[in-house]
Every structure is written in C-alpha cells, then in structure tokens.
Length: 327
Ligand SMILES: [Fe+2]
Image (cartoon, rainbow, N blue to C red; front, side, top):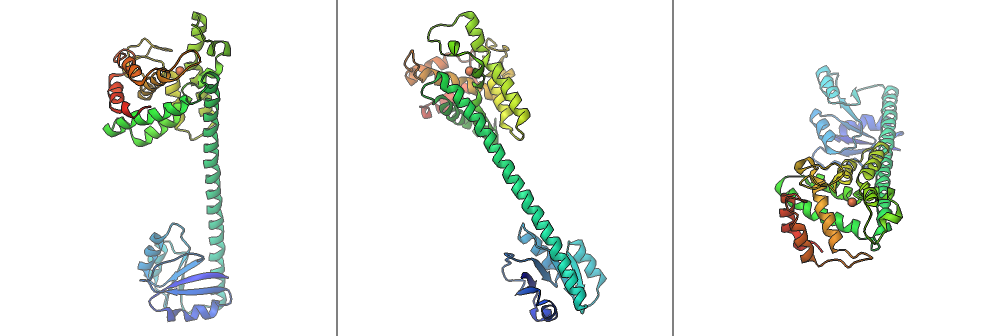
C-alpha cells in the first residue's frame, strides 16, 4: 500500500482524507517541526504554503506534494501551484473524485520515478564504459611498454613523478588540481606510439642507424595519431587531450632542437614540458638490459645541465624543489 505523509500542525484535520482513502493509502502524520523523512513515501500532503518549500529543499528525491485547505481560496491555490504542487484540494470533496485524483498523482509519480531510475542506470553504465575505455588505453600503454622495459615500472613511476612535479605548480596556481589529475591519467600514454615501432629497432641493444632512429622518433607522432583516434571513439575523455599533447611533444626541447616539430619554449604544451623532465629522469635511473640505472645524484646532475636548452627552467626549479621525494 502506498504511503502518504501528512504534514500539519493539526493532524486531526485530516480525518476526512484518512476516512475516505484509508482502504487505498496508508497515512503517516508529522508536525512541521519534526524531522522530515521521505523514505518509502509516495505522496506528501500539507496545509501550509511555507511547508512546500521546506519539503522541496529537504531532499533531492522529491515526492509529489498535494495541498489541502478547508475552503476554496484562489490566491492560496495560485501560490501553491506556482510552487509546483501536484494537486490542490479544498475540502470537503467528493470521495470518488478524491480517490481518482490521488490515483492520478500516484501514477504520474511512478512514471517520473521509473524515468529517474532509467536515467540513473544509464549514467552508471556510461561511467562504467568510460572507466573500461580508460583501463583499456592504460593496458595498451603497459603492453607497449613491456616490449622494451622488462621491469614494467616506467609507466607507474613517471605518472607518480608527474603528480609530484605537478603538485608544485598546483601550489603556485599555474595549473589546477583537476588539471593535474587529468595530466597524471594522461602520462602513461606518452609512449603509446611505440606500438608502431618494429621490435628489431625498439629492442636493438646497440646504436641505431639514422633510418632506425627516424623510425624510433616517429613514435611521438604515431602516438598522437592513435590518441586522436581514441578521442573520436571514446566520448567524455578530457584526459585524452592532455595525452595527445604529451605524446606528441614529450621529445620537444625548450631550445627548439627537439622533435617532431622543433617547437620552442612555451610553444610546447606545459604538461609535455613536465613529461620531458620526468621521462628523461626515469630513463636515466632505470636499469636497462644493456646498462645499469644511474645513481639519483648523477641523474639529477644531467637533468640540471639541460636547463634552458633541453628543459624549461621553471620546470627544473620545481624539479629541484621536489627531487628529494623522487625515487
Ligand atoms: Fe618517448
């Protein structure tokens, strides 16, 4: 049986409705000063205009409100209807008509609720899809990385370093916390273009020929093309715009001597300038099949030697401030 919550200072006044509707509805009375609880309530009934707004602001899920008054009062009815009541009753009212109008309200309320439930389900499914797509992109990035990185830690470490370095710029207001969250999620895709580089080149232990180097360097643009495709297929992935900028520009240099486009200074997206430092630092300290990773101090020394040439001086200043946190 559906439940009707009666909010009135004079609950006895509702005897008429309880008497006429009791076979179809269960009634619960509440004084206006008592705590509102709409759990399992289908309809709320009240006799005071000021209660309508109170009910409306009390909960997101708004049960339909009906308004009762003892005599026909047009100005009160207009006020109540302007506040969005589902129906207005002046008592006394014919029993059959009262029941019909209550049933109408219940029906409309059920349709609205089932629509709201459908929308909630659709939103949940959409969120799941977004998570799944992001996980797929990260899995592809890890698979690509595992071809030339036997420890598999580069992606995780660089994303962590990006977070630490980025925090320095959140503190200065250069980027927002929300942007940094997107940048950190985008960072693992920086080398995704290596999927298009042959094993014979990617895994070659010795120096590369100029042709081979060219193919290796193509991973920036290949990654950008791949991420552009993902952007077209995956909706609502703001982080992919950052991933695109990072994949395309993480080998650009501050002095314009990098690749693929020789962009200079602030022409290089800021997040790619962050990635550039983080990527090189991690490559220096990591073990490779053909060499052991460098000591942290030595790696930092090499990084700082690139101030203003390979790397953005502001980013290096921040790197200096947080380098003790790096592993
Ligand atoms: Fe790269």
